[in-house]
Length: 389
Ligand SMILES: *Cc1c(COP(=O)(O)O)cnc(C)c1O
Image 1 (tube, rainbow, N blue to C red):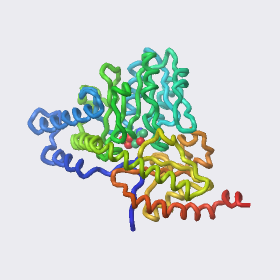
Image 2: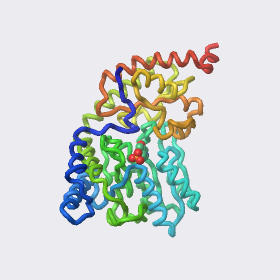
Image 3: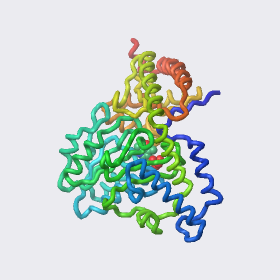
Image 4: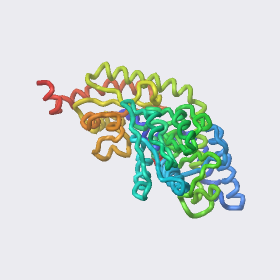
């Protein structure tokens, strides 16, 4: 049976060229980069070279890159790190209602520990209104954290404009850029953010490694305690193969970006158009233009996303109903509720995300099979049959 992967927003396969780059650091160059001997030094050299590569691509300085275990840690580090560094100055944090759980959960814990949190609403496309941010800022605001692009609906926020508002009031701005780094052009000095999270496994690197960009001078309390790696900011032996792989992965993304964007946008728009043509009562979620090149998200009325997912899986097609982190729970997605969908409609959503190895014929196959699956499920749906009468 054919197996087609259309869930690149959940994770991506490692690029073979990335693995090739990593391999020596798993075997002959396995040294601990904190060791003084030559084994340690060759690993350290590789890490510093990876740091330079990543910094250069992001428009940062090497000393502004801190290696972490992934997007979740980078987000936690930013939120707890700034909150505790600036708690003397204020206790107010602003975020949005559509953040990834790796922002919402740490923020909830900070709320329990006495911080006040404002969750900005989004409009029906999933966009934060800069005027709402302006109004939410108080004298106590110490941090604003708003994601660059949403992992479920693909909407890209006007980060630059939001950062300008933050900086006029002298407030730090963090962005979760896990869905954008390696996928769309991104420069930290153009966005002017103070902190930015990224994760290698979302851009064809290995899992369990990521980075946090921290603008020079940003006050941040350490999060992982132990050794003095990463200039004392983040303990634990460096994941040398992972870090080397992440740098290579980002390099490849940078090299192929224009081509990949063009290809994915074309396939994305073809899917959006044909699904609407072939299936009645489907609604596109997210912004029609300001969206990730590889993201399609639809609500399909009268049926459950989970049923569509399982039926497509039997046909060898892997898609998602929302984010991988929430799709195992039966709660409707907080993102889809935040853009104003009713819980019923939110339950019937389908996310298709494309990537480096997506082929035109994969999309042909999806578009051939999906209408039949929807039809079959609707015939069995009490909601749909009630409507027919
Ligand atoms: C995947 C993802 C994360 C979590 O990253 P990990 O490296 O898996 O911890 C955080 N934010 C967004 C937007 C994501 O898509």
